[in-house]
Image: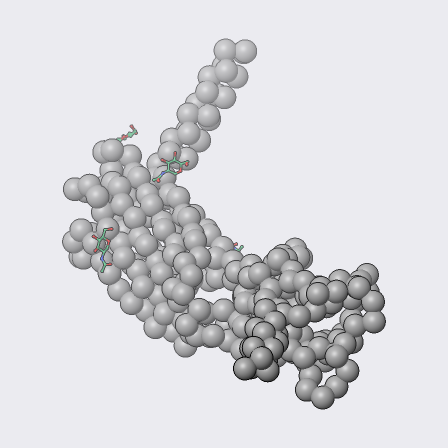
Length: 260
Ligand SMILES: *[C@@H]1O[C@H](CO)[C@@H](O)[C@H](O)[C@H]1NC(C)=O
Ligand SMILES: *[C@@H]1O[C@H](CO)[C@@H](O)[C@H](O)[C@H]1NC(C)=O
Ligand SMILES: *[C@@H]1O[C@H](CO)[C@@H](O)[C@H](O)[C@H]1NC(C)=O
Ligand SMILES: *[C@@H]1O[C@H](CO)[C@@H](O)[C@H](O)[C@H]1NC(C)=O
Ligand SMILES: *[C@@H]1O[C@H](CO)[C@@H](O)[C@H](O)[C@H]1NC(C)=O
């Protein structure tokens, strides 16, 4: 009885191991600045199998099939959508396609509305038609860049009053949060623009600030994605030494011209 149980368990485990090992598929992805997402699907069949096809899906819809029988040892194709362009390069590194990979470059034309759900399905030849398949979520997230803060003095007004301009980039568009000391403050004006070259949002925010103590002024970029808050490095305006680099230079030039 016990040995029979052992037999069943062993057979089950062996079967599971065989299915799991049938075709090994891995998908990895990376954001390439100024290009887009590069997603690589690599596979390895059993040594005695032959590659029948590789199918690629975006959000459940097949957009590419690679069949060595029809396309030979590789296939490169470009797919234009309304909001993105996808370039795929599939290549095999062994004679019967037991090993190979498809590299996808996904370049958004427009700000992505959400994540992309990518699937890579690899099939072996008859009679077994073994299948290996992986889903991969291309997360539409590029963390906010470090905040950049520029200060400008107002002409003909209180010397303690400055206009602060804070900016950052990211995907989705980062929010820029202002704090003075321990208090959150509302921006006077903020704006954003999609940059088709970087494929990211440029965001900026103005705060008109009048110094009356040595409070630290911070501008912090952050985004919320999948209920997670992702922060970029904040920029600080220290009102105690409020002269910015450019303002110092201007003061120096002015002082020099008065000496002449
Ligand atoms: C998939 O990833 C595993 C773990 O990193 C590795 O052992 C395996 O060789 C990979 N297979 C392929 C086909 O890249
Ligand atoms: C290939 O190898 C597997 C595992 O080693 C074996 O089960 C199968 O019968 C072999 N032949 C074919 C045609 O897949
Ligand atoms: C991705 O798409 C596949 C096929 O449509 C589906 O089975 C899977 O649940 C989806 N995954 C996510 C995270 O949406
Ligand atoms: C496709 O990938 C192969 C192997 O990585 C490479 O040699 C080839 O140049 C690539 N083709 C294109 C059009 O990118
Ligand atoms: C504020 O910063 C943004 C982003 O760097 C820039 O486009 C804009 O011209 C700046 N505005 C001023 C008044 O400096």
